[in-house]
Image 1: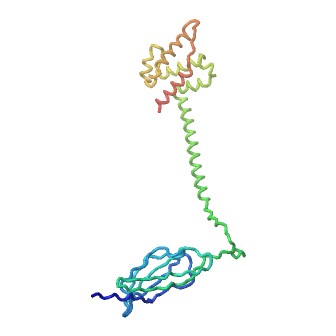
Image 2: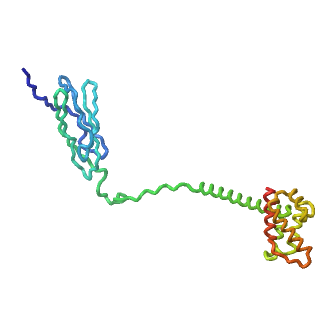
Length: 278
């Protein structure tokens, strides 16, 4: 023998609704539904689904609260997620809440109004215009930056001038002190076509070699030159050719002189001397 189940109990709960007017985009509307009070107890109610309910509202997850009198409330938040172009009537949706015991609570929809963030039409009077230009960013004080840039530029210029002055002094000092530096300075004063054939150019280079070796140098005494100035060793072949050409030029009657790159040899000797000194 079975007993037929009785009809589900449907009741209208006590609901605390949000204010019905004055809402804008982003506002949170809170609805509180009483679940138990005195002899009435709706038991464990399943909360409604979350997400968008229409084009205006999004329902957030429900939560449960107990007030100071021991009553249980279901609290549901709705957020306005769309902009109303004019004052618009919407509504919190109706709900049907069911408990595990079969009790059902019916919550009617709650009408309310939402408004636009601002008027569609501006007043077009005075400074009340439809469009306003972008606000200009405040100008930063540039005087300290200009002073710093000028100071840095001055230091850079001073550094470059100091370096250029030191470079010129070093070259002048070397040209006054080093034999091949003096020879190269004198060689550059001659016209390029005459530098390789001028007797003064050949004698100038002879003097620089003699001063470097500390004695008069000839083809047979080149080893003593390289012993005193080993940095000239890579130019041994060119120096041997130089002394061979010099002997023919100065000690052979009516010599048949072949072209010889005297200027290039002097420059090579000067650079070797520079590398050695540094």
